[in-house]
Length: 210
Image 1 (tube, rainbow, N blue to C red):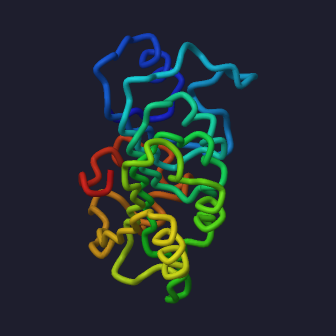
Image 2: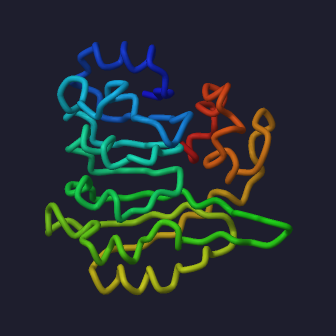
Image 3: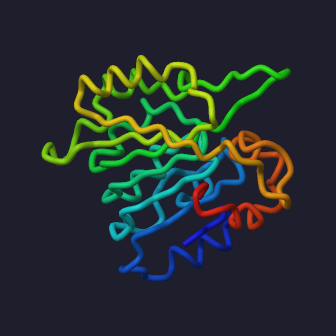
């Protein structure tokens, strides 16, 4: 299920029992505001946690993504399509077994500035990211990139290997963006202003990117 961030959509979503729903994608249109799962003036959660969801994909994650994740305690497969400091979500991802990060090429003045540094992966792994939950399950971090390897890959890969975490690089952003979407992959996933008015168009992105 694809759910854009709007009060009307979330109101209907939260009032409907969905015990069989396992896959959920949330597309945020703003970053520095309360999550739609919370009341306007406080961070009091509306209703109970949604325990049926095991696969969660958050696009353009809000600054308080840890609060959002706390509503989905049984997620084992988490995909983040916007750069988020992963140190913020360590305690909220105890059951996560597979973490997918979208890191499309970031070009400025013709130079490649694609990097894992803003994700704070090293600090997060050292703080226990993917080292919780079932010790008998091999944890995996999948990084979706362009053709070039992002800066910081080698050091993070070495650290994860030493902790028994598998690192996988998946090249999917080496193709042009869809013709109905303007801008680069990086702008689509990270620039809120560019597509604030038509998030539904972004829900039609190829399956490999959502």
